[in-house]
Image (cartoon, rainbow, N blue to C red):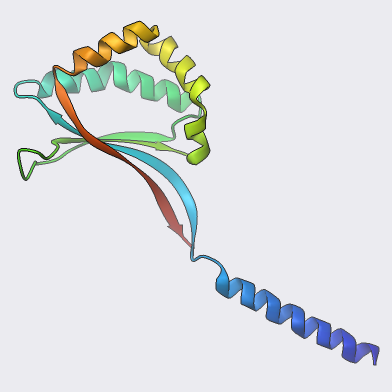
Length: 144
């Protein structure tokens, strides 16, 4: 009798595990990327690329060293219309929680880029070189 009860419990447990496995997502949440669409102003492409290769790259490297950013990239693209970007900037973070580490990100930015007022002035200066057409936060779905 005990053996029959044990086998019944074992079969029910196996069925439950199989049902749970069938309900599991076929992916897991992966890294998160902030994708920015940039259109440089006429005659400003090289100036903006110099800024990206200098201060922006220094900031990204410092954030990467601090564990806030896992990767970053700049992509050049051919605009299909006058309203399309010619550059796409992608900053990848390990997960959504990295977005909540604002105090650490601010400290790294202050160390690399200077005070808040200096950072604000730099933002205004970059406005003469480019227009930000928009940005999007995307999360990778890592297939199982």
